Length: 182
Image 1 (cartoon, rainbow, N blue to C red):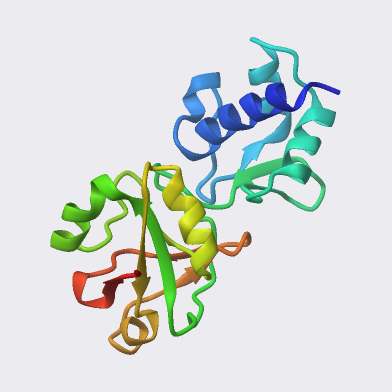
Image 2: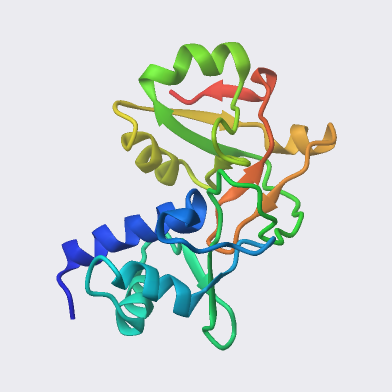
């Protein structure tokens, strides 16, 4: 088996392919974000050692559960985080009363003016707990966490989804539903 660093690098490459740029290795995603496993493996193996065993290891050990296989492992997709228009068949769900959003300090001014926007993604990503939001925020510099009044948003007609890996998704969180967690 490959080193953990090598698998991490390949996992990041797979994330780029399945969320943003499948054309990088000459493959296409279907309307639900699924890619052919054999085409994905062949595309990656054209530039580095890669096989089904390595792909299964990446999917199995990914701590964020970024990827899913179909039942017979002939197709794979990213669970969320796409910047390309795909329908990953998310089920609308009733959110908990409070959700959390972790970000970096450098984004505070924009968030406090515009709320949370999906930017290059299809949805705003929200966490079910404060600690996860802090961890997400750390990826963007000094972390800042916002409490999201998801209960009131839902009452006011906003729609929420939950990805298979537990991430909560919505199209936009206006400023009035946000409060900086202190």
